[in-house]
Every structure is written in structure tokens, then in C-alpha cells.
Image (cartoon, rainbow, N blue to C red; front, side):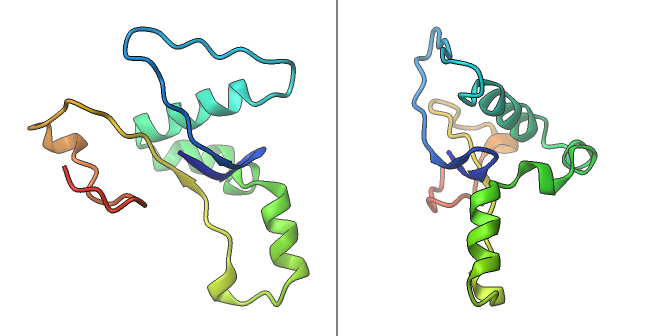
Length: 104
């Protein structure tokens, strides 16, 4: 699940367990999806800092915020989440802090 990540205001993909292929034209967002996967699977704060949070946020959501009342409560949220099935017992991947409130 992506929210306000690069070109995507919202994107939810379901992939096949065996093989998923991303196909699309130039600037369709294929590399952005792969970058989001890399960021979340590496769980590397330094990777996000190296890229720069401003390069990861969707430009339209920032513009909408700046055109609005600019209240703290209305700050845009950047969300990158991956949900796995069949990983019961893997505490390092338990995902208790997720937007859907799912508890494994």
C-alpha cells in the first residue's frame, strides 16, 4: 500500500505468490513501486535520509496542503506498507504498527 508516495496519491497492489511482473510505459511508476519495496523491506532510516523525504512525497499532496489552511492536523501522510500472508511466528515481521490495524 502506498499513500502520497512519489506519483501515487494512493496505490494498493496484490501480487501473485509465484511471480509478479510490473509493466508500463515510461514514468508510469514501476521504479517508484520497486523503490518503495526496497525502502520498506530494508527498514533503513539512512536510506530515506539519503534520498530525502521531500523526494518521496507526492508533489500534489504537498501543493494541496500549501493551498489549504496549513494546519498541523492536515499535514499529508506518507505511507509505504507491505502485508505478507503465511508468516505466523516470525516476530521480526509481525507488523503491529500498520494503517489497517491488523494484528498477526
